[in-house]
Amino acid sequence: MTRKELFKNTLRKSVHAWKLINELPLSDDESLMLRHFMDQPGFLDLHWRMFVPAIKGQGTEEQKQKWLPLANKMQIIGCYAQTELGHGSNVQGLETTATFDPQTDQFILHSPTQTSSKWWPGGLGKVSTHAVIYARLITDGKDHGVHGFIVQLRNMDDHSPLPGITIGDIGVKFGNGAYNSMDNGFLMFDKFCIPRDQMLMRLSKVTREGKYVPSDVPRQLMYGTMVSVRQTIVSNASIAMARAVCIATRYSAVRRQFGSQNGGIETQVIDYKTQQNRLFPLLASAYAFRFVGEWLKWLYTDVTQRLEASDFATLPEAHACTAGLKSMTTSATSDGIEECRKLCGGHGYLWCSGLPELFAVYVPACTYEGDNVVLQLQVARFLMKTVSQLGSGKAPAGTTAYMGRAKHLLQCRSSIRKAEDWLNPAMVLETFEARALRMAVSCANNLSKFENQEQGFSELLADLVEAAIAHCQLIVVSKFIVKLEGEIKGKGVKNQLKNLCYIYALHLIHKHLGDFLSTNSITSEQASLANHQLRSLYTQVRPNAVALVDAFDYTDHYLGSVLGRYDGNVYPKLFEEALKDPLNDTVVPDGYHEYIRPLIKQHLRSARL
Ligand SMILES: CCCCCCCCCC/C=C\CCCCCCC/C=C/C(=O)SCCNC(=O)CCNC(=O)[C@H](O)C(C)(C)COP(=O)(O)OP(=O)(O)OC[C@H]1O[C@@H](n2cnc3c(N)ncnc32)[C@H](O)[C@@H]1OP(=O)(O)O
Ligand SMILES: Cc1cc2nc3c(=O)[nH]c(=O)nc-3n(C[C@H](O)[C@H](O)[C@H](O)COP(=O)(O)OP(=O)(O)OC[C@H]3O[C@@H](n4cnc5c(N)ncnc54)[C@H](O)[C@@H]3O)c2cc1C
Image (cartoon, rainbow, N blue to C red; front, side, top):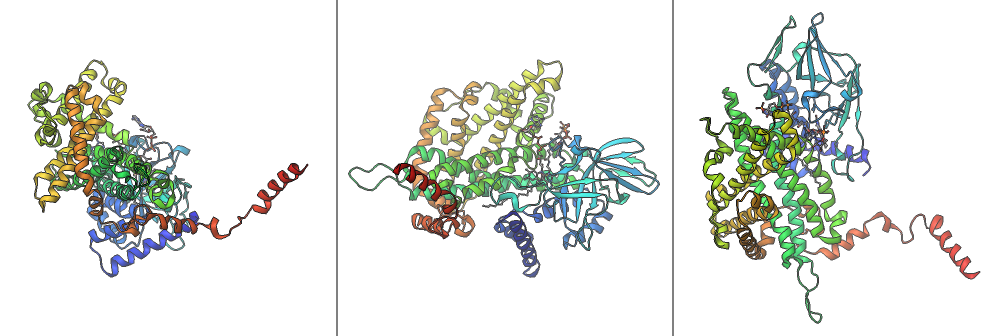
């Protein structure tokens, strides 16, 4: 499809989905499932996942009563317009202004520079009638920082932009199809007025007289919508990883290369240890991200209930966990999808493998809802704070509880003696805890050598990100182990999950061996025992690998991959797909008479001469 056709088709699908949700009707969970199978980014994502939650989280009761019924019936369509041309990560650096005018009781929204143009919001370019806009609030000449506002963008009769608003699509993005179904947009305000009651005032307020009343709760609650989406992105990472792994695993069982003596049957590529060493950790990651996603959903629900009761104690941890896990799982999944493409050899590069589009549509997850490095630095700040409070009497809790055992973890030596010890959950956990704590403490020690903490932080950014990743990996490993300790129906299933859990942990040790050795969390002998155990786990997973991806229960239609077909009938179907290509509509291609024939004839003529 052309961009215009793709966009229009996405409108058609979205509206059809909305109709089904209402007619059947579907519950919230079923609607989410429908979105999942629609399988295309579109304006509904931003309306339901960001616009509505922003009003719910930051609006007053009156604002919710006014706007939510309209939004819930989709009589207005909204998006989340925060990022600008000049600033995305640095939210405090946004430039759009919202100046209160006491004469008219309105805010005047203005884009003072080109870099202040809103740039990127999904659904903004062509669809949304409304947006939650983030802008600097100015009253009586004083800048109070960034706040949210509900703004109507387009005329409800003919969809034209309201006077004072310039709006459009930012253009084609990475890949063919992929995220181009979405109208990511730009927006400029030219002294555009909105009534005062359209500032989202649950946190801070502006009175009729123009007095600014600051929030009596943490101002970071304004970032709550991002926290909520980051949490869902972790579960989505598992879905995307599982999809790529399903394709690569099934195809690896079908594909044969080498290994036959005198014309016998060749080896299935899945039997090569190199293939297993690249594929099985990704299979394990798909499961691991699912379990940590379930746990994160619980954590998010818990913090939401606490916030409603004005208990803000766990907010920093919820922020660190959602930010860090969003970052870690999306980076691993993007890399994993690309690895799956390579695991499928040349055919993985074909569009009909399903992997190129999956990669193209998935990879912006490393950037949206917070650049992955910027988010790990938030985790690092949280860790540095926690380390600095050790010994102050305030015991670290939740995912940093292990830091409370700093004395032991800083000096303990791993008691792994034989390869099977690497299947001991306590020993594995302690190894990850020691590595994470030692990396964090080492950063904190290095930071303390700087007179200026912020300067030190800047200097040590790369180390801090590594410490943050180590902490996040510990969370994933620990939640996998907790899952195994819970009730799992069927001994066979439990055994398979156990194998995957230890593959996940041991492959991380192998991949980050430098960290584990340099922090003395393990010795090189213990590292080689881990490798030995990993190879043995691969052998145990091998006979069940295809069943473990069949368990994701993806239909062929959803996978959209010739290589990942359930029936393994890959080669005839590759031919079928090739023959569908428009280039094969004619035997002699368009352009032959114009370019190829004259070229060949010229050679023939010169040959005769
Ligand atoms: C084959 C075809 C397949 C098709 C498949 C289709 C499938 C598609 C898959 C996708 C499906 C669904 C996806 C879901 C839908 C996703 C839609 C995505 C749309 C994207 C939207 C966006 O991107 S919106 C914009 C997001 N922007 C950001 O994330 C900006 C990042 N920056 C920030 O968050 C902040 O500025 C930053 C945290 C970096 C710093 O903030 P700042 O105010 O400067 O604060 P600091 O001074 O650093 O910190 C102050 C203290 O506040 C703490 N803190 C910061 N943030 C929070 C928070 N959120 N909550 C709580 N506390 C917070 C911070 O830690 C500091 O604390 P301290 O104690 O003072 O140290
Ligand atoms: C597909 C897609 C959809 C989007 N949808 C929306 C939407 O609906 N609404 C919306 O408001 N926004 C949206 N965005 C914008 C998105 O949220 C931002 O692009 C994202 O937050 C990153 O910000 P940035 O572009 O400013 O990156 P930058 O911050 O400019 O990042 C550039 C580089 O600088 C590095 N960097 C930046 N700051 C630091 C630092 N402090 N320390 C170290 N390194 C740093 C980053 O790691 C990165 O390598 C979308 C983006 C994409 C790609």
